[in-house]
Amino acid sequence: MTHSSVLAPTTLEWITRLIAFDTTSRNSNRDLIEAIAVEVRAHGLEPVLVPNADGTKANLVVTIPAHDGSTTGGVMLAGHTDVVPVDGQSWSSAPFTAELRENRLYGRGAADMKAFSGVILALLPDFLAQPLATPLHLAFTYDEEVGCHGAITLLADLAARGIRPEICVVGEPTSMRAVTAHKSSHLYRVSFTGLASHSSNTPNGVNAIEYAARAIAFIRSIADEHRVNGPFDPSFEVPFTTINVGTISGGAAVNTVAQHCEFEFEFRAIPGVSTTEIFSRIENFVLGELRPAMQAEHASADASFAPTGAVPSLSAAGTGAALALVHDLTGTTTEETVGYGTEGGLFQLAGIDTVVCGPGSIRQGHTANEYIDLAQISACEDFMRALAVRLAQP
Ligand SMILES: [Zn+2]
Image 1: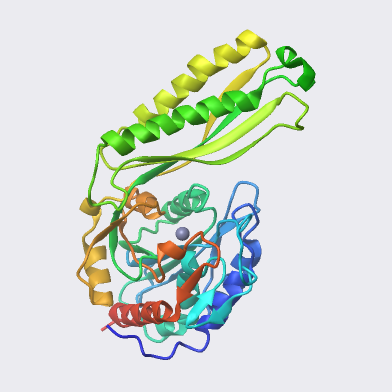
Image 2: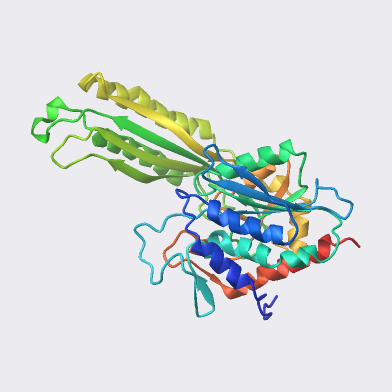
């Protein structure tokens, strides 16, 4: 399949606009959502905004009804609006200003995954050009990168309104190939409260950083067990369960015994591995060993655990019509597995036949100088145009 076609005039504009909103997950995405709302209203559609608990973020869902007015069934295209931070990364151009160089578009979110959303918005007229045989749902979510919280409220909203898409395509970067399975992902925050003291008198305090360090070393030892002993699933690029400590913060000054330390870890389990067992071992170590040891130093010390998100795995066994549709629209016949989690696991759990397929490569996702090849954007346009033809009322 070659992609020599010229991009729709508004596609790069839309992707550039979307990149310009700094929707790092810690920020609000409301400005970006408002821009999409304005656009879909301009096309005569009425978007539904599904806010988070404090209203700082929102999903946007819009349904193009079928020719007979029906709004349930059909196809849903889903993309998250948030991006991962650029903190600490060295970029050669401004991350939130899309830049075209050597047939690539650079910018945070170019691959993961504002190109997919930009193509949808640019090609809205294609979907509205003729009556549809089945509805098309467009879903733009918040907080995917920090635990898929938006997808959960999205599903609740759809259920409340009696909308159940038959098929979902999640446009995470797969180089426009069909991905039908991924690992589950589980996120936790671990907090240690020690007791501050002048560092000249360490026995007077309880050092929260030191206990966090012991917990982290323990977590690494479990990760190493899985890496060496399995279980293994060769269909994954990383064929074993992984665990990663991704953030840590703690301490107030070098001459003070650290009163607080907090870190976040996640694990990504291959199908069949007991996630409860992994979590229980870590929990038992932190709450059963470290906490009593801290409290033996001072009764006020404490340690706690909080799950911050979980994404169920996506199973190839659950895909039928969605895979057939993606194969048909892309002209591919392959079926792949990826290590990263997506909202697709939640959609599948809700009974929606789901496949992941979107432009760009995950290799560029989350990196400094994230980019997407223009050929990938073009391939995504071809996909959307073919979908519009497919959905048209015969
Ligand atoms: Zn993503």
